Length: 186
Image 1 (cartoon, one colour):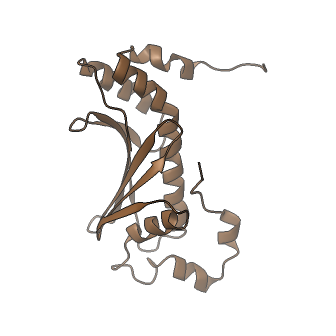
Image 2 (cartoon, helix red, strand yellow):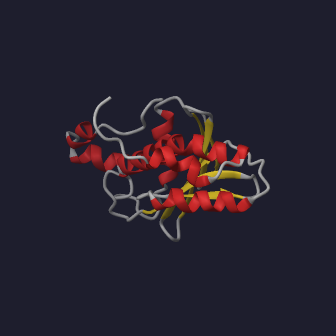
């Protein structure tokens, strides 16, 4: 999978004019829309995306286990960019308590974002929101980092969500291999 992480060294070597051009928030604070930045990130990597409106875009990304649907929404009044990464796992279990136990256990380990459950679609989703200041610098880099973190977390948790949501495995049992601390070399 291609990383959407921006080369920090390339960004450091840019002139002030290039940085201001890359970060329109400095020049057009009230007109800036980070959805344009999201389009730039994915467009430069030939991902298919659908602009659903001025403030929304959806991107489908091929994951290690399955495709993921990335949804971005810009709330201009709050200056907040919301991001969701939907994992394509349909729950077949009746006992919803296992789903919510798994969410609680998984979220305990996260530093950025959180897992949630979209009850309408019966699927797990990773969510994160970012407040964007008018003087935000290196925004493209920040958004790319959030995307990378979300994809990595979804890839890491996919097998666990899958076995709990489709086979009904106990969440603690499903998470056990991830909680084991590796010691020494094999």
